[in-house]
Image 1 (cartoon, helix red, strand yellow):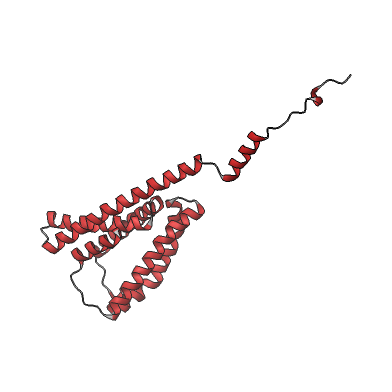
Image 2: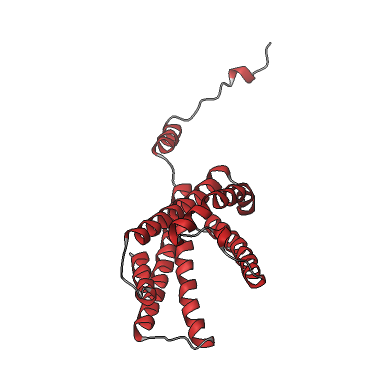
Length: 213
């Protein structure tokens, strides 16, 4: 429920165009589905094989780069009607492409670290917090317009994040209490065996310890 509150808050403060077409809807659906599967797979693979974030990233990054090289030009042509090779590259464009690649590396590292330490849901909540920080810094540093709708959406998102953190902390406390109780409690079979030993104590064979004449 707290995640729903966060999503509604972020949607209120960021969504400005509600028009939907088939191309945009299909691209958004594929992006959400692929991102969700990737983040869930990251957490499950790290837990299944007990490997670190950097080791998993080094194994999966080549496949991600290869798929982007093979599918990227066709996706660009589907969205823009032009291939990337028809774009005239300048020094400024190359600089920003390299900067984007560098930021993507840091984004992937933080993604693998966060999902390996917490979960995919926690990473999404943290990502929405990033969106709120971007809007706030844009208003503080670049004099971006900040309407009442944006403020209400950001406040709702922050409230949802606090509720999610509180729910996660309660779940951790209940899990630790249950594990501690299970560790200190005896099973029914152990209790039955202990009662049997108290009622019928084992009889020592004294004759075997007597010396032979």
